Length: 107
Length: 372
Image (cartoon, rainbow over all chains, first blue to last red; front, top):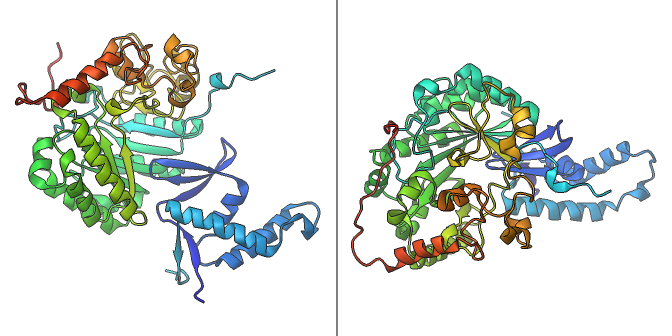
């Protein structure tokens, strides 16, 4: 199986808007207001992570951020991975994320 | 207590910076005012830098540099750079005239994200005839420059009676030029376009054929090109909402510094628009009379107040209401229930029953139109 590396489309830019206290995805002629989770996932879409590693990193940051360290509070790894896959699938349909089959090489 | 949602002022997302009304093209559907702002009254680069800073503080995250032709602004790269430093997404809306490889490279380096280039048709002869200027080849060069520099490319085609039958050619051109986004914008009838409505308004049959071409292309190009279809509102039964609502999403600063809720609002007589030279953007957006005039629902006529669709279309476009009825408070005549809907019906009927040659000729946009 080939590994795939989601990457934010070059036309899009993430911004944390201090005035609205919201994460935004800026696009030509469009601004998308993101929730925390969507913003965290998209921030990891740099072309160097697979959905598997994105899921892992997201879980780590969610566990770090929460007061109690019980993993029971989080859905299972597989469930999260499925949900992230679905989310990224939608993002690809919108044209905001592209899937690459090679890691982005450093310039 | 229930908070009145309609009267809460949220910060604006976008700024349309109309740097100048000067433009090498003479498109007869131009939405710029009939009486354009002359060069002597334009803001300075210093003024614009200040406007951008104020806009960012107010919450603006996207800026569209437009005009006229914004490339005629010699310090455009300075403005782009400033907007970029304010973490704004930057978009250039241009005819493409003057966008050389070197210029594109400079603008990209300054932080420009997206370039939208207009074409007047799918092929040279017609494109140049509609624009009243030999622009087509230079537009193609501009497209190459944008692609080479690595910026995102959008194309815009304004559709009307004279070019809408060639929509397939238009889409083919966009594909060939590898545009990432294409706007197929049916003419909206304000200012110059309204003057020329007789010549520009397509027939129902033309619209239907074009919609089919658009739908087929959209399905076919789903993953390659984002396609936007701006509706021909004369053929709709309900009006378009005014730019997401009067004073809701964005603001326009005209070349002389007047601040408008939309690019055409200046046509509404009896409304006074504040100027960035005298007032702060924050005051204008939040507290000025002009921006609050049509916020919420209190201003609405009975036709809208008693209609559930008011939440969808907000009563329609204030500029269109004023342009067609002389009353900016009227329900947009496009609405099938509007008391003035007969105006739209008549225009549509006339254009669909035309058999003879059009009697009057088209009026091209002129920059230095004599003021009366």
